[in-house]
Image (cartoon, rainbow, N blue to C red; front, side, top):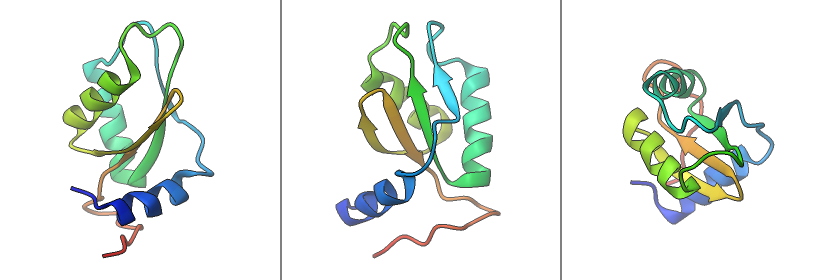
Length: 97
């Protein structure tokens, strides 16, 4: 689990990022979860955009993505979800204690 200080740090790191995935009408699919997991391994921190035509609540979408990828939900703001997962091979982000 991330501490409040770590989440603040990650929110600051994610501020300039653009969403690289979009969840639409189909909701969260297994293929999407696999792609996001691969992207998290490469980047550690990413944003996912929840489109207006998505039938699920954005908080539920965030929980599904986190559960499917093993990531932490850093923030859900507006229709954007920020996810973090420590990379096994490409570790770039050093979290504060």
